Image (cartoon, rainbow, N blue to C red; front, side, top):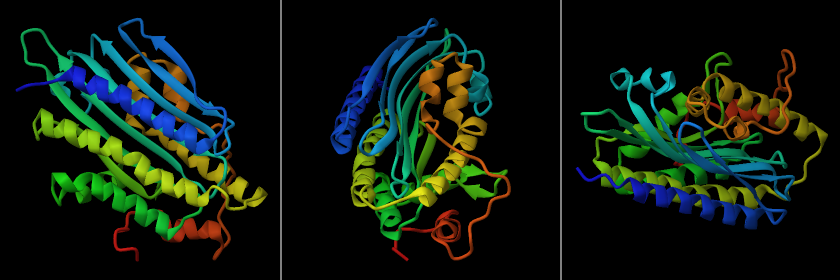
Length: 304
């Protein structure tokens, strides 16, 4: 089996550059600031953050390539047979928090792991996906998002999109709230059964389809008017985003448990959020429509 780790590394660095270039162009503001960092145990990364832009209140696009002597508990809980192995992990992760409440928050990640042990063959796998978290739902945006997600999967089989769409719905779910974080997208992990070349090609397809999925939505909604009511609801729903990232997100747990750079790991948190005790939207309001029509697993492909 041929495993080309340098090719994965090159792709991830190029993907970060490409996404940052296009997002800076889309924002039209101050652009990204970059910090490079090193990890004491091995490796490092490039953290790029855009703040107070024309479109994005905060946007972060991170690349990391780190090494460790022992896989953290967040990884071995799913794959206990790998306990005690060293590892290297590389990936690009991004979270975009627009200022306009009509423009959805979004997250994307593509990653590659190798678990090593002396005297044994290395164990590798790919993971990633992208998901959308609207505050005010729009049918055409949800349809476009999921049709683009399906297009990323189509070359790899008709069953791939439904499988990873369902996994995304199940993963980005807040059980203590009984609701999904948003309208989903794709989520996959532990991908190795297709062989290296095909698995790597799928990861690239997911990474390459993120911008075509998100940019048209941002361009369509960025100039819609909004006021204090919409902002208050956006900040309230951002609280749900923070709850998920701190309580359930695998990447956050892995990063913190592996001794990663805290500022880069928590870059995904919204710059502002709010909580309000026992709040419920007014029935029939645009805010209620998010709960009634957009949160929860459903088929978006037919445009119904």
